[in-house]
Length: 114
Length: 110
Image (cartoon, rainbow over all chains, first blue to last red; front, side, top):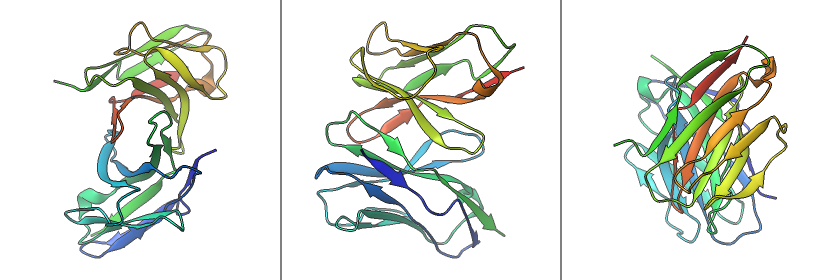
């Protein structure tokens, strides 16, 4: 069975600083996708960043980047120059290439301190 | 043009009632999901459908029944609502590279 684990229920960061959110996953698949989703208080689920498992290069989207360690099954999200609008729940998610199972971690609540 | 349309956004109802939440996607995806998000924000898979066929049915009371008339629609019907059913329910349409979510339905059972 595939599982996604986020070991940090809550994190906080000073505005303009950098924060890293952790995620580990368990799978027997070799080809899959990993995601970070953001859920602000509006409760809309917003895709932050995506990583294909077959790509060694870490994905980057502006201030957001990931550290993907396939052997360790680790997928952390780094937010640089944190902004107040980054405050939200962040969910790590996994889907195998077959596309039939989309699982989320338990979420990390990020607070940005002005 | 909304990719995943989920209605209603809010639903308040009394215990024992039967209610439905509708979900429609215009992305052409074959796979759709229903998730329940509890007060601790945990997103739990309830059901997954692939091209109108049930793929995943997690441990969910049989009062919950998904209905997929075609691959663009996956509705959730709930019978005999209980207080513990209060939560936010999300519909999602899943492609190989991303999941698109509806706006969520906040269900409150009183």
